[in-house]
View 1 (cartoon, rainbow, N blue to C red):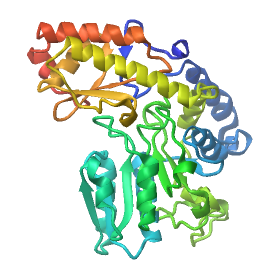
View 2 (view 1 turned 180 degrees about the vertical axis):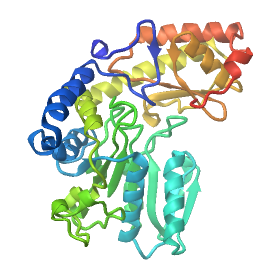
View 3 (view 1 turned 45 degrees about the horizontal axis):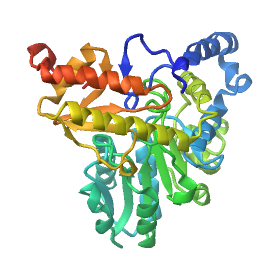
View 4 (view 1 turned 30 degrees about the vertical axis):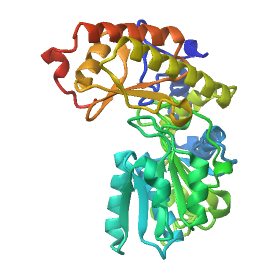
Length: 392
């Protein structure tokens, strides 16, 4: 339990770390020191003296430890959307004789949007097919080029069996991409054991890297020197400062660099990752299950109008719990006004994240007590709480 290491507002119950993790206390000084002593005093020499250019790799290795990836296979930078594009473009190049990208209807929309845009720009007869999450295994075939899935459904928390689906896909010659946005830092992940070709993810959720924290991409080691990056940015060049006019891909995972590393954001993430150095992911997962199971039991006992949207079996669920309610948005706004922070996903889902680094059983029980009061007394039923905000 590391609650004291986070700068959480007093009297707030924060159940939205699955969307944006709170500020680690050490990050403020870590970033201030970098800005003062490195950017302030070194200026451009900081790229060499302070190791800014290497941060994408050194921080990538620290993220890699949390997803079961060997050193030198994860690199940081850009946004998750960019990393999805890179992974999918490379995967299609590997499987150039096939034209179908298979995903599911629970995938985060940006992954599907990036796929749609890429396939349209290729204009080579590719198609994106989506099926219900539970139908993915049956939809695999030798016509599919790439299987692209998010391991944990962003709305319901439904958890795919990564190893089983990867094995089934690869038996049919399909290249596999996993989005770990709701997995990294939430549950044990072992990319080495899964043998998937690619993985991508963000670091502002369970990893607490801050809003806009850089994304990551993993490439299986045996493919790292073979993949052809569609976004051939100058820092992915074999020798960026040779300033050649022709692109030559860098060595291994370095070819998946695109633009200049976001050094300030990487510094904040570096500080956040300090909190993970002694965390056992199996222990964290067990505690996550205890917290989420407690929440489900208490909500169902006290708030019968709510319907569980997440899998009841914790082995099939990530580190979040969702409930259906027709006026879920208004209920969530009422909760927020009372200091219980979750979020809402259309059309009717109230979503709560459980992050064992700082969430306690007492937080769960207090949140349910407030939710019960809101539901029993219809406190949500006011124009104020039904007014939609830009971010839900």
